[in-house]
Length: 508
Image 1 (tube, rainbow, N blue to C red):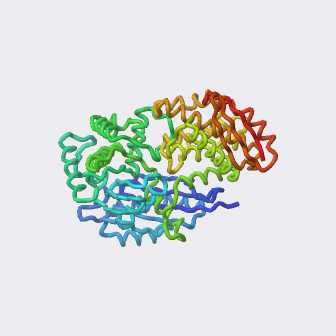
Image 2: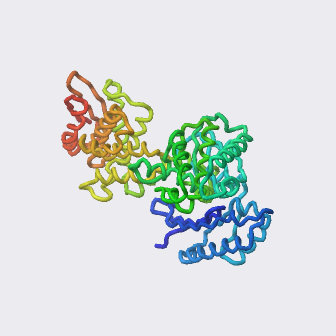
Image 3: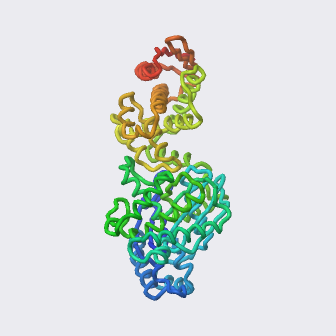
């Protein structure tokens, strides 16, 4: 069966990319190919803002090489968009005509608003922040947006980016203190022309290659134990430290920094200065990286064009639905296990045996809905597979720490395995948090055994707490003997953690 494919070509000031999306079995499109060319079109803009013939030739040659790929995949649905370098060019109409005549593509130049709006769309459809400030620094422009309640409130596009800032302020490959001082003063003056960012105290969300490199550099520097950079967070102090560390290096050393792409070594400093300056002005204590950017925003708009709003109502729910489809999770069974888990934790809370926050209730819902997901690969070692899959897969809407919480709960087998899985991340949690997640994991395992035959027979769960005993009263609508057998096997994990004997009574 031929798969449905869709492609976007993003013509930026520094790089040109071709991304191909393929529809998977869940019905969603996921990135299947990503081809990049470092064209640096911004460097071919003359003083009178004309894209030189040499620059046009670089653009056409790159598009022709992409054309070989799109023809191979027999792609017809292709969006080709250009940003600052072409937008700022006085001869943009001639460039559009040349692209149309010499390649398979019809190029569309994005306005400043469209470029900023697509970045905003990418963030709100792939991250959990309800409010924030996005910054997308390209080679020739920098887009800022403010969104509140997931709605776009302000936007602005500055006509400078990492390449143009490097050209304007830094003469050699490495920067001098006087050059960095002049750059900082310029950035502060420019950003303060906006009356809607100073003192906002919102998270700063970075989009694009330079932001991604900053996150990768920091991950390498601290031996970060997880894969992936989407939704990775850094504190303001950590951004400052990376900025100073990179600024102190010679260019040869800079090129060897782990996590930094060699083609960005000469422009990373101006980009990080932008992030550093903005965090200071905003009063932001958190920098978050969105791996989803302009291309994804264009894609989201195209995929939701038949709907009133191109913003997903709930990012996490969308992500977990995709997970359920990808790993053949029985949704009716998962909902039943989740309901049983929630009934049990509420009973434990009423008895004063467990104290949960609103966020904890969310972890119960998510962990129980994904419980035993790893059986898709191998039922015998499903717990290890469950933890690995959830810990190492990007889940839109969940920060990395939150992803580990869900992985620990969904893979729960016993206290020892929980401890082994949590070992790499012990510094991320307090002892009290780990103890609490241990109990929640045991509750989910207990609830899972109550639906061992996937007949969804449990209708209500009541709990009575005596001095050294917990008495569960399980109301069922059908014969419960297979479930009773499993519960008697699994209750020991909860008994050890709650330090009480558990008696379970089943009745109709």
